[in-house]
Length: 431
Image (cartoon, rainbow, N blue to C red):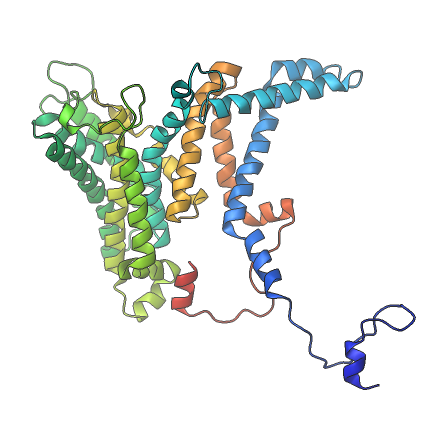
């Protein structure tokens, strides 16, 4: 029998173990479908979904541990373990049911119009998170860690708010000018970071943190100074009410908080997707993010890219402030207008893997957490801090993909074996 016949024989005639192939016999490569399945199961999308699942499981454990009925039933667990398990189920299912009904649909509402109000609240909370997350995610793709969303939002809010209440204009023109003023304010504050990074090599993390403090105290001063942002005749650090011509129109009527800022966030998502996927400028951003030295050798002006991406990033974060000032807070705003959105945007960008549509979905998810968290607290007595814990755990699991893969026994994507050198263009396309 030839070597070829031996190598092709799977088993001996007696049905025993397969005959080993002679040395040097080429091994057939694994099917392409196996590699595709490995890439899908170990890919970033599946990791992000499973990170949320793990965070919800951990949140359920915390809910059970803090529930009084569970604590009481656990005192006699060994005599009646069923009571403890039932109490755990009631506590966890009740909390997450309240979270769902407070963020998606209220089954206890009298009609459909009242039932979908939680969903509109989720989209309202998600509107600034999406815009700010896009700004942070865009900077991530260019290798810049923009954690100055708080400062950029405050400056953008001051600019948009001043235009919104200072002088009357026709409806369409006034709203557009106020939105553009907010974008310009955020872009200015973000552009300072990019300029310092390009000219002096200053690290953007340090600069953005310091500029956050500058913006907080600057806007606080302006809100307490008559003639700047403080409402005339008021001692409170608050601006006058926005003029009706500078307010986002309602999308579903006055009975809902949802406004046209959501459409602006959708348009911003499409813009960032086009910028990164279809434009030469976006290719330069991604090339700089992969390897700035290689990008410089390829003829890309890295310093200009730093300034440009931070200008656009700050402008997108400014849109989040515009949604706050001209949308849900039309009676004037104070220094608390940021409401933590500038830092939540980092989490949204991480969960969305810095991809525009991933950020869009992550923004809606975190908007649901914000809307449903209050329902959990009011209906089930669950501390709203549990939601913050879940959000923090999502970040933890997102930052540790090997941990998620180990828990669910997922394969590592990619081809095993020796690593081949990857050209810059190929790496940028993958990123």
